Image (cartoon, rainbow, N blue to C red; front, side, top):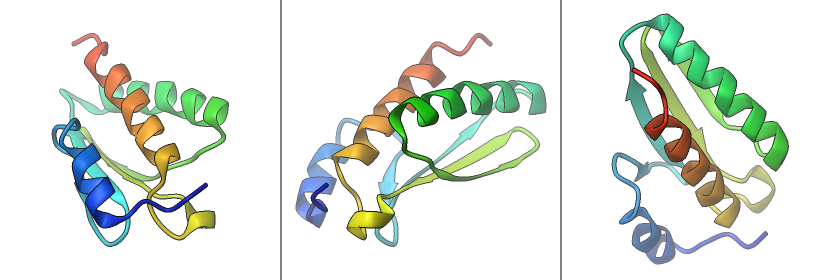
Amino acid sequence: MKKLTEAEINQKLEAFDGWELNDNALETTFEFHNFKEAFTLMTRIAFECEAQNHHPDWSNVYNRLHIRLNTHDAGGVTEKDFKLAQTIEALVSTNPE
């Protein structure tokens, strides 16, 4: 998969609220009502990551979930990262509150 240029990444990021390019990766943080809600969403995301064979670097502290996406084999951000970001956004937007 081809590594995207910074200009290509920034153009695509216009469609992703809360995501930014940071040190050659896409990053965002979500905040939920509690740990259970955050962990439930992490589990849903994990199944999608397996289906796409693409896995984020992420961390969870109580109700916050930080996600970092890049394609290690390509040495940066690719279409694969944007596809997973789009999937994550869809899961977050349908997350029951």
